[in-house]
Image (cartoon, rainbow, N blue to C red; front, side):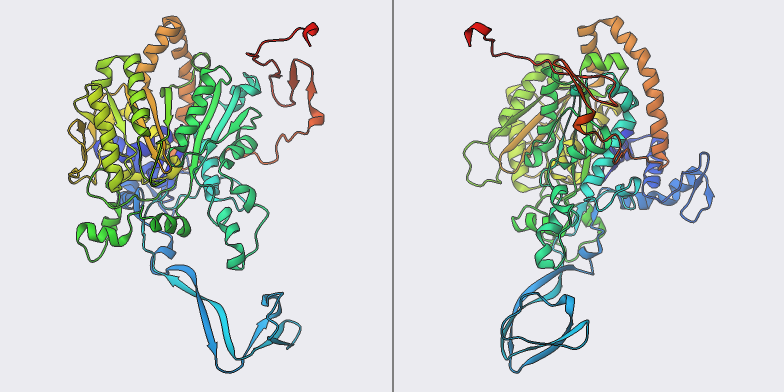
Length: 629
């Protein structure tokens, strides 16, 4: 697993540890804070045996932690948006106006700024080579007057302050979401400890796939956002904005610049369920034997004025006025913004966020063979629509089916006791009034059906906000952290469960909860009726399943091979915790045309790839003999 969100880096469970910080030992707290300080460039760990502060003074690591602790806490997770446009500067905008001109208006303008086509009544004369004088007759004139607008939404889940993913590779006008994808996929490869080139050389290149995307494309100025407003903003469209805006571009970037993959690829879009849609593609590919390794992920960077305004206009976001009304406040402080997201409490809307998450899926035989570190397993992802709807964005009935099937699978695999006593829910938990009512009712009804008395509920958006298509990726990687640490994050903004939440059979906690889990349910309820529930089982349970399937000897041999993997992973994590990131980005390397390939009726040999691509295909349709044509 690898990635980055407002809580920090995914590898090594850093982001998870930030969400349960107070429940960790003093040493684990210190190492988490130190790693975040390095990530945020509040501390310099570039030298092997020394730490320096921002002024270059060599300090003990404990002193660095003490000095930076509050800044790390204040500038991670949900907080006041740090883009200055959202604060005193205001959001740049234009206002349409109709000017009544009583007498002719004369102005001077640079030649290149004058439109090519002018109204026929305008009179123009040259002042010099560069300047023209324009006279507009009396009458009316339609204009756009520049202004700044006060931001109505000022809270968001942002990547840790000071961390800029584009710094770690040659990023040339890449949208933020794609820079995040490069970093996150590199983090995943580093954490896996296997060495991507070595792993790829073991496999038919077509046994690899990448399923990655996001829910709404790249809508910042470097992507479709800049393209769509280029005419009205007076800026030129660039050659990169159109192609880099597509929602499947995270997969394309991985294939072209990170993995060099020629295998399966694509992106499934499902609003807030997008990560689970792509996870399902990977799981089904592996279960069907089509692929052996699949990189699954999403990367969303929606903290932009236009996207925020779109969600605000539909009443989905927790805007400043709503937050003030919720707590009867006249003024919002930084602390109030940090409490903006309140799943299952009295709330007023979701808090938008940015995040990129990637996981590497592998078939179990290959995982044992290469000595992979196994964080858990995903036996199934269930997707169902809502059926007839009145409002396209309102919740519906499909989530009852997805969670019901997921619970049935866990009961069938692990038994009633494991489902009732050793599973927990990773709620979509958006912090909207409709979500708290409808999702809690789904949980309650399924709990009653399966005899669950006190189902623990985690709502990670209270910490990191709603990252749109990446939301379930935040939930999944957090669940893996819970398996590793036997801790469930609390919901710190849950002062009191709202009166309309179906809570009788659910277990909510404000504080981290010690809990040994066998299974987690990753739940998503996306706009448009995109419901999905993924099942993830713990590493402990996975190892027991592997013994049952492959035998004790195979698992013992895997554990021996895993020691080498763990050493490589530990080296990567030590480097990452000191802020020494090296993104894997190979622009222009190994580019091939069709003339370099060697092809027979059985294989295609690709230069640079150790194994050929097999052309053998499964034919379930039957065969006609030559005489039957």
